[in-house]
Image (cartoon, rainbow, N blue to C red; front, side):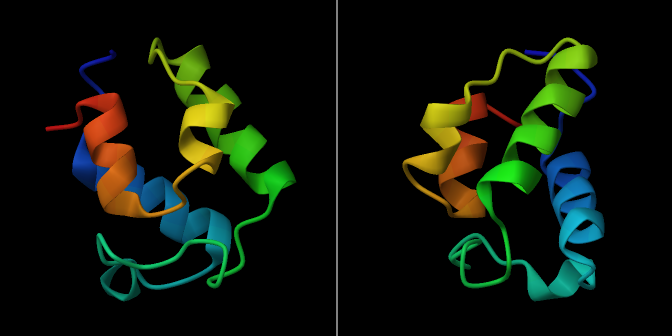
Length: 76
């Protein structure tokens, strides 16, 4: 995984994508309920991959909670 993909970075990127304040994103938030769709998720995956992260669309889509994503990606 890329060292640039931290918990803060993931939360910031996701908040920008969903046009939400970062403090509205908790580890337990259902990201689908907050407006995440497959197109937006794929955009995040591609952005993170382009920066060196090893990330899989299916892994993230299967559990759309930020806390689960942290675990899958091993984010610090």
